[in-house]
Length: 351
Ligand SMILES: [Zn+2]
Image (cartoon, rainbow, N blue to C red; front, side, top):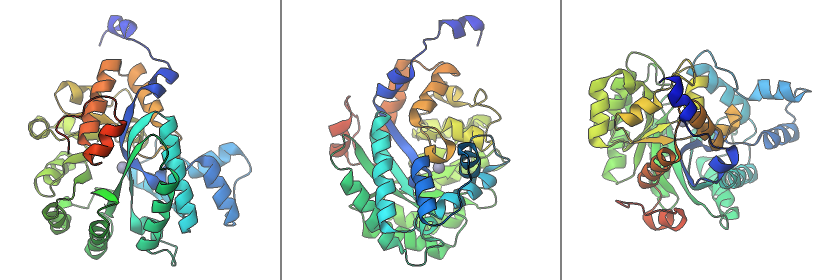
């Protein structure tokens, strides 16, 4: 891109981007805590808090590129400690939905991993966690936003546990809109979970899979396997396919939307810089791309920040933002009536 194009690109204010109706398909509930809430809860639980705000940020958040994805996942363990009761889960759920409203999000999918939250809290069973989150959703029911929840199978854990997550999801189909496979991909092949996701497909449960995130040799192949063997209807991240024209054309032909999260991808070093993110290349190649924040609480960002990044660095136009959002509105697993109630434009091929 030459300088002339950069100069002629429109610039949008944060307020303009905030007011743009948006869809968030990829946001982890456990990664969406307000920093003020995190500090307050940690203090209540007797967890030591560093004396200065900067030290708190350094201790709990990821605001600079980490060595690799695994070290970022380790940071999550710091926030995990405060998720210790149904009431706390209700509070953080309500606040996550309220924050999304303030960001101009009209359709919000929040995902969470039952065993990640339960870990280290012996009294907190997946059923109790679910009850707390449902309570938070109820507290937010008057807000002008459609919300759907996705359960997460952790690829670093056992098949037995994966089976339990699937069962919980199937037992609460009125609550969950889909299921996901997450965590560090390196060394954890998607095919290991084929049986779990075949069962999900047989039950008509919508599937999204974290794949093709970190830049390692099998990244693109993981996207292919996730689509062909696990039945993924959307891919979490998937950005590494830009290296593989064959898999790019497979994703394009099948019309599988990618849930891209630029700042997350930079902080986990999936891309060396925000400038190097392949989002525009993928979009211009005809891949359905959507814009997401992943873990706004952990990264100290919000979805509006991601729009600022794309506007300022990748020169996204209002029309391109709207198109990404219409793609996301269509791809959202939230039931059709609920989606259309909050989305300003017609959603085609409604689920
Ligand atoms: Zn994610």
